[in-house]
Length: 355
Ligand SMILES: Cc1ncc(COP(=O)(O)O)c(C=O)c1O
Image 1 (cartoon, rainbow, N blue to C red):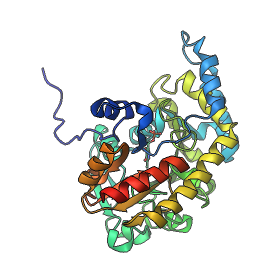
Image 2 (image 1 turned 60 degrees about the horizontal axis):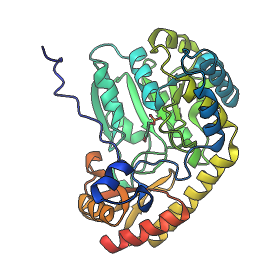
Image 3 (image 1 turned 45 degrees about the vertical axis):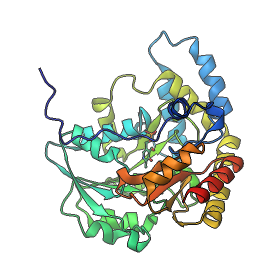
Image 4 (image 1 turned 135 degrees about the vertical axis):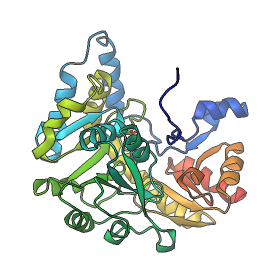
């Protein structure tokens, strides 16, 4: 007995976990500054922690109202109907639902290169074919309609990321609209705004009022500090929003995660602190790191350090965990998450020593 041929599937490479590295180095986790997974350095929203504690008493029961409440609440925030909110087990889960709903076997999609690797994985799980469009370092990783135009040929989904991971570059809303205009009616333009809270640019959700070919991805993992709870969502056009009921995994958005999400939405102070500090940290790192940096829109910076693997390894030995971007096809870089002020200063000091 064997699984089907999985040779085209590549395992997801997450940033190193803090316990894992602490054990390896024989250190306490408190001695480490983890800046490798673009998490919230202040932890979860305190109101979300409270909600998780309260909900713990009733987790013997299947989730009932929490997902409905969260969909209603998010619909209100975005000015759409609850049916247009597709909750998932993280934004990753919502990516899977979109692939399930959209892809027929052998449908081709376009993903950014470099880019977030789960797009490819999700498409392959759903028997689609992955092709790439370039986001070029020689152009400062600028994103525009030309990058898609250069590769587009009737693909079923075009994945856009804004702010982009790992480069931190953005794509203006007018360019998203141009891409949607220039691609076929049956091409979905999927705008991943996992880092949307960290930018002042308007969300692409605004385009859904007039278009049926744009969907937007958002998450509670970053600015809301709920990466471990696994809750994210897609906002999709009303015309086909009812497909969710036919593709979602029953109860995938757990009661704990939905209650945490609802509480986090009420904790504006926590999000604002994360966003403010990230803004400060981006500037501080760009000004003080002794290397070229890219980005400025997410809660991280891409740093051209020469040998990314060696620098990440050396920084780790000094207690600062950053993301080697070799798996993104950028072996000369590391990606550094915005930490607290103290954590960011320490990271800059250590990185400058080891570069
Ligand atoms: C661009 C991008 N999209 C989506 C995700 C997935 O987020 P989630 O934790 O909600 O699954 C990430 C996570 O790092 C990301 O960087």
